[in-house]
Image (cartoon, rainbow, N blue to C red; front, side, top):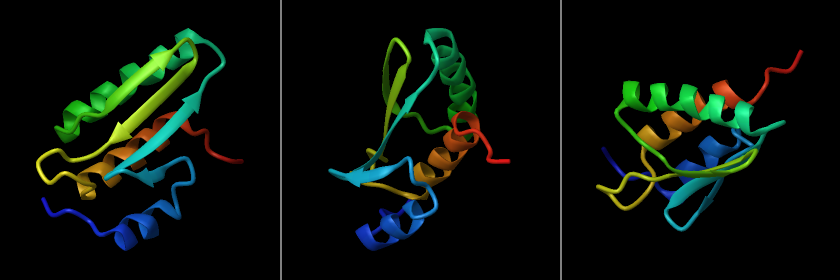
Amino acid sequence: MEKLTELQIKSQLVQMPEWEYDDNAIHAEFEFDNFKDCFSAMSRIAFECEALNHHPDWSNVYNVLSITLTTHDVNGVTLKDIELAKAIDAIVVPEED
């Protein structure tokens, strides 16, 4: 997998406003109504991670989920990270009516 340039990353993130690029990784923080909803989202995300064979650095405190995505093999962001970020958005960001 090839490391993306900063320009390539930022062009992808235009459509993903929850995510920011910094320090060779993309980062997002999601707030839920309560711990149960946060943990439920983490469980759904875990299945996507396994399906894509790509895993985040993440943590949660009560109702806040913090996620960092990077591809350690290339020390930067790849299409695997963008694909996983999009899958995460589909899980945690409600669709607008």
